[in-house]
Length: 130
Image (cartoon, rainbow, N blue to C red; front, side, top):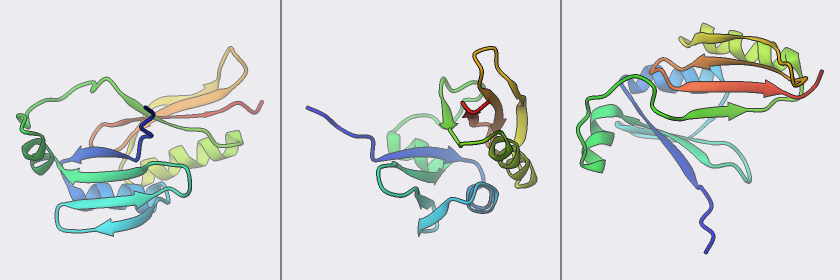
C-alpha cells in the first residue's frame, strides 16, 4: 500500500506571524485561513503546508504542548540557481526568520544554506547548479 504525503502541519506560537512569514516571506499561496489554522497550496504534486496554533495542535494530538529545541526534522527547498537560494534566505530574514547557516558552496559541488522560520523550524535551501 502506498500512502502519499498530503500535508505537513507545523504547530506555531503566533499564527498571524507564521502566516505572514510563509505567505509574504516565501511566497506560499494561502489555500484556507481560519481562526486556528492556515494551509498553503504548493501546486500539483506537492503536499500542502498547514499551520496550526501550537496549543491547539498539541490538544488535537492529545500530547503536552511543552517542548523546544531540535525537533528532528527539517524542510527542504531546491531552486535552480544560487541567486534564488540567496534571495529566498534574504526574504525569509526580512519576514522574521533567522539565518542558521549562511549559504555557501559545498564540497560536493552544490550551494546551500539553512534558515529558520519564526518558530524555529529549519529550512535547508540547496541548488545543485554550480
